[in-house]
Structure formats: C-alpha cells, structure tokens
Image (cartoon, rainbow, N blue to C red; front, side, top):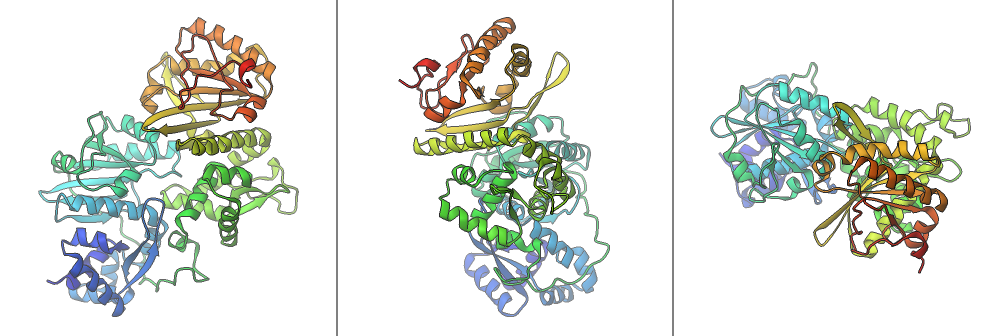
Length: 555
C-alpha cells in the first residue's frame, strides 16, 4: 500500500499529527508523506491548522474531514457511526483533542521518538482515566503515557496516580513532569507501582530523540535513553479499551486560523507561544501589576501591551481595579485546566477573579475564587512578593543567570513527615536559578506581621523541621537557601537573634539569609544586602559573593 493509502488510517488513530511525526510513525519517507498529505488536503479528505507552543516549533497539524472519515469507513467496511466510535474522529473527540492540543503535540513527539527505536507501533487516546495515551509495541509490550501539566493540582493528580498504580498493568509507565520538583514528587509516588516507571521533564521529551539520556526510573537510576528504556519494557495485561462515546457526529470544517467566531476550545491553535506563556504566568501570579509581569517575562512595555491587548480582546485576561491589576478570566482558567486534564470547575472556584456583583467596588469580599480572594485581601503582601521576584528576574538576566523556575505560594508548598506526623512549609515563593550549569535554589518568606519573638519562632519552626530531614535535598536535588525579608530593619535584626537561638537549640543546618525592604530595593535580591545567620551554613549567592552584614551593605 502507498503512503497516500496508509495516511488516512494513521490520521484516524492520531488526529492532528504533523508531517514529521507522520514520517516517523508511518515508516514512509518525507518524499512520500509530504506529497500524500498535500493530496489529501487538495481532495478535501484532510484539513490542516497551524500550531505552536513554548515546547513545539511552528508547524501544521492534519486531521481527517467528514469526507475523509466517510471514505475511510467505506474502505474499512464500517458504517460511519461505527467508524466515529472506533477512532477519535467524531466532533466530540476532535474538540477534546483541540482543547489539549499543546499536550497532544508533546505526546506525539514522544511517540515519534519511540517509533525511531521500536516500529511499528499502535497508539490509543483516552478521554478519561489516569492514562493520557497508550502505545502497543512489537512483542505485545505496552506503554502508558501520562503527563502532568502546570495547571494540575497536587491532590487531584495524586488521586490520578493512585488510580494509575491500581489500574490495568502496562509493561511500563512513561511520566512527563513540567519541572524538576514535581518530577521528584512523581518518582516518590510511583515507586510502589506494579510496572516499572520512567520519568522525564516534558520539555526534554518534546525535543529529544531516542538516543538522548533524559529518562530515569522512579527508584532512581542513571540517566537512560529511550532505546535503553524500551529494552526494559515487558508485556502488559490486555490493552484497556476507552469508554465509547454515547453520541457521535461528523466533525465540522476547521475554521481559518485567526478568523472570528471560533469557539473557545479552538484557542489552543489560535494563540501564539508568547500569548500562551503570558497566560501561564498569570495563572501563577494573579493580581500582578503590568510592570512586574513584564519584568518576570522579560518583555518590554510595547510588546507586553500588544500581547495583553489581544488576550483581553479574546476575553482571556482582564484588568481589575483602578490600578489595572491583571488576572485570568474564567474562560482562560477553563482553557488551561482542560489543556492539563484538570477540573475546570475547581479551577474557577479557586482562582476566579470575577466579582459577585459587577456593579460593586472591587474588594476581596466581592471576588468569587477563594484563593484569588485571599491574595487580593493581602494585596500589599502579594505585590511585595511580585516586586521582589520581578527585580530578581531582571537582575538575573543582566548578570547572565538563567531563571529556571519561579513558583507561587500554592506550588512552593512542601509536605513532609517529621516524628511520625505530617507537616508542611508554605513559603511565599520558590525559585531556581542556574549559571554555567551551577544551580541555586531558594524559598522566599516576605514578613510583614512576624514582629514578636514568639511569632518569629512560630514562623521559623516549620523550616527547622523540614531541614532536619533529608527532604530538602530529595525535593530539589540540593538544599535551598531560605530568604527572609522584613519590612523594616529593626524587625530583621530581631529575627536574626531569634533564628540564631532556634538553630542552636535544634542543631539543624539551616541555610537562612535575612534582609529588609529598603536594603533589597537598594542592592537587589542578588546583591550583597543579606545577613547570614551564624551557624546556619549559609551559602553564597550564585555569583559567589558572600553576603555582608546590614551595616556594611551600602559600602
């Protein structure tokens, strides 16, 4: 059979493949696939749309039209309705895949890399359940693909992993994580899985080939390539069937990119990578000021205004209050939640910035989302944290440092066991910077109320418990510094005394650095305006300049 004869079946099993992925998965050459795709489009059997994300370069993705589905059903001897249930080509299945298009593209790139090491393979999408997709490899071996997206909540994804561990046994699990911290968390949870688990960062899996050593086992191993991973995959149980759709309909024609009138679930292919990056940033930092958002993203005022103008026009971003604080709309929260298979209703209940009463003044009591309401209630503190991180990002770029990760409070929290009980730390932010391959991590505590010694000791206690264990290194691969910033110098000096006494009493090696607002504004977060707590084994900043006491910082 020719490439033109095989491609419709491939596009039925894997809608929205691009041509390079089709080359890898079909086994045909570029010279055969590219003309065949063009011919399918000219005949009206397939349609294409543009797509790009922060991990996937601009490309065109192809899907069967209603005519293409009808012809394929006839060739396979199926009724059209049966074909719509056999493959993810119905209107409903297409909508689900378009909502998840950024995630779909990453999983297709991973499947294409696997096809370079084990061919032929079969692919199956799942609308529900713990698995995103499954691959059937030669030799009756099966792989389950699972992606944790940035918008997933800790508890909900932990339940999904439990279902994965207790569900059908695959030959192996391949898990993708958005950052190194969550990758280590996934590894801890999957050590008791029935099948061997391999983990990688999503950005690495999207760009690497079969020979790149980016994979590790949940129990810890040297870095492995896909070739080595596939050699360890054994046979699994029966390949689980997805739950069939109750009602099916032929897909409507794809609208032109950029054209008006497209429904919200079409936005993943209409948005540019820069616009998607901005939406993700606002998901992390609601109620942020424009200047702080531009500094975090490294965008000039004109560029930022252009992006915000388009996103506001699409109804995804809104400016609130007289000072124009930025937050995502409920449509944007739904968009990000569905991309990452999170519950959109839960995302809106937590993070909606919409007022209960649009006619009433914007106050924290008039905001729907409970977490969004809390941030607005403490807006002075929220803005101080945003400002610190914005200046840190600018200073890091100016000094040649890579800002690898900046996490807001709800993602910076860490949970751990100490003396048989569950404890946690809830910093205001977590960050990871790197220069010349050398990482430096930190927790940020911006203190406005801890001015009494007893209150200071209470705020300090969770970190003493956390650093008394091995968990900081297990969570991050190194021991992050704890940066504590006070509003005034006197409180910072008092805290130094409290910290010294508590560290001496607990005998814990806690790398803590203390400063105050005026000094940070003068020296910058990566400057020399910090005091190290004696006995705390404080490390230098990434530029290896030791912090100096408060009184010497301006000199």
